[in-house]
Amino acid sequence: MTEATGRAPVAHIAVVDDDEAARTSLVRLLDADGYRASGFATGPDFLAAAAAEPFACAVLDLRMPGQTGLELQRALLARGLPVPVLFLSAFGTIPETVRAMRDGALDFLEKPVRPEALLAGVRRAVAGGDSRLDATRRRAAASARVATLSPREREVMVAVARGRLNKQIAAELGITLRTVKFHRARVMEKTGAASVPELVRLLDDAREGGDVA
Image (cartoon, rainbow, N blue to C red):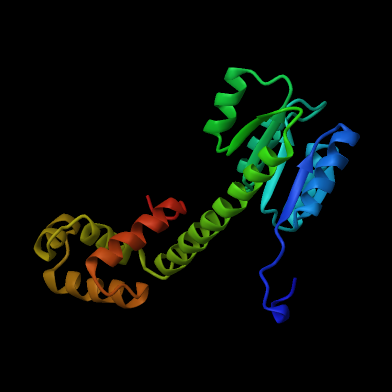
């Protein structure tokens, strides 16, 4: 859907299963429920598509020749593609289930999957994906603001976030109190933080993004 219609875009769901009949059936089920579903016979085919456009959710078969569902899930994580994952399998084991959930899978459904169970799982995945996307955008914005700081300003920012007083920061960094005050003012100005608590939240978001040690 376009913004001109005033409607939210239709969630794009991937179904990755080497069984053509099962794949086609799931795609039709999702399409009928109002999603835009695309089927993929192999993990590499889906990875290529996921690199080009975002998917709201991926329904993965656990046992596939070549790249398994678990391997595909790890490949998504390694490539920084935060696609919510649901697993389907007729032969799932407890260790595989545990491993999938630890890697962020939202659910593990047994084949043949009940249509209502699959649709409920997809709805949860899409809703959760929106929240994760917001968090990703927040972390990216925080990282961009922190990136404007000089190395010394970063040191002062971290010290302030730890609750250090200006005198303590000056002693720890071996600089004058006046210099600390100058850098502190610059940190608040560049990051747009209006208070120390806001600066702490900004720093936490940037750390989650991997930009601050």
